[in-house]
Image (cartoon, rainbow, N blue to C red; front, side, top):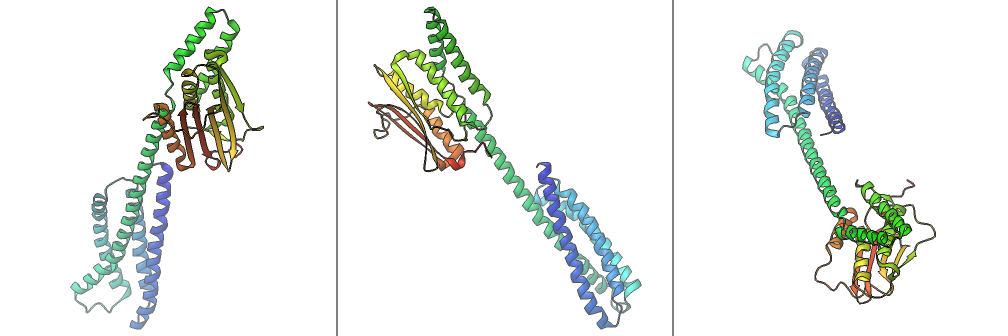
Length: 360
């Protein structure tokens, strides 16, 4: 458990600890002030005696409880350890109470048998200690449950982060292979300017991939810049066959966005709209805000979402993308995919409320 959680747990313990013993003392004061005068005795010696006994109990049990709360022991073992201290304390308080009452407070018990006197003393001292023990065990049970919940949440968070990393950083080896082939062709053709531009795009894309290795969102503009670099590399591969039609709002919203989320859509758009079809292809990339949702679409011009995916299984990177969306946003995000003779179509929908505003 963290230091902050321990401090909060100790603060809660001392609150209930003090409330318990002070409430007990208040009840005892009320009882003594009413009962003792009826026996024609002074109340103040009893008040002083019970104040002393209660303060000893408050101090010893407080220090004991504070020490035991910091130890992550099972409940049964915890109860045994408390009893090892509370039983001697109980006996000591019985002897102290009896001595003080018989010496300074009351003569009415002189004619009562010693067995009955000590049975009464055992009971009167035992009840508040037993009540405190019950309160402490409730606090300890709650602490162990809270620690268990925190541990489960931490394990779930670590598993989620590990899974997100696996899903996010699966760089397609074919992309690197094809890019290097394209670069080699430009070098052979002595197209120095084009080769330099390709290296610049590849550098931008790889820098984006390597920089955003934490599970943190980035500005939407940065993700679109990386997408533009990726598609520019593909334009070098396919030449004039691949045309890009960007449809962006006049001003992009100041939103934070998961890194490398659009790469799988771009990979499959190239694979199913350009690589598998002859002739010129116009790939449309649009970003729009519709009904408090961010809508990002990558599709061959003319393709729509009505045909549905024809294969029994979608590509692995699209399955990973859908799983990553579920982990990040749950029902607040959706992915629509289609692959038909009209080309590849994908649409990503994310509710604005789950994206972080960079202005906050």
